[in-house]
Every structure is written in structure tokens, then in C-alpha cells.
Length: 108
Image (cartoon, rainbow, N blue to C red; front, side, top):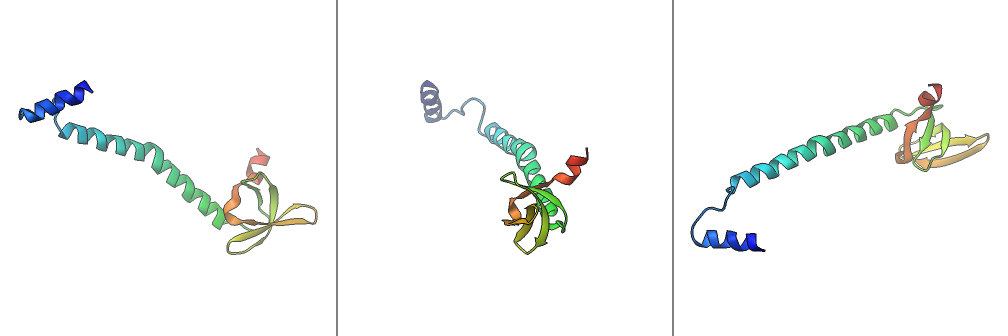
């Protein structure tokens, strides 16, 4: 509270507060750039890779859904997939619920 009072008194006296106004804007812009570089940019890259994976799904691919259901792709439609989770047990899921291909990770 005292700092605010000092700043207001300095402005009333016609003096520039310590630090100036432009350095605050430089720091603010620097914080935005750092946030974009370390948080937003990697997230966008990850989303693009996931969308590319979902668009490239084919019959026979082994997948995992967001809910942890493992299955094999049987049929692909525009927005849904029919996956086989056990012999003669098939379920329809939204394409956006597929998160990864586990056939590659199972081989390692």
C-alpha cells in the first residue's frame, strides 16, 4: 500500500516513477514470448502429431483409447471407429478418443 502511495505522490509531483513505464512493457512482452515458446508451441505440435496419427489410422491397427480400452481397428468412418476388443466383441468409439498405437510399443 505504501508503494502505491509513493507512486501516486511522485506522479502528482510530476516525477517519473522509478523503473519507467517502458521497462514494464518489455518484461511483460518477454514473459509472453517465454510462455509461448515453452508452453503453447510444444502443445500445438503435439496436437498436430496426434491429429495426423488419427487421420492415418487403417484397418488392423492396434490402438488405445483415452479410457484405456485396447483394441484393433475393424472399420473406419469419418468420425467414428469400430474396434474389436475381444473375439467377436466390437465397440464403436469416437476418433478423437484414440490416443496412441500400442503395436509399436509392444514390440520394444
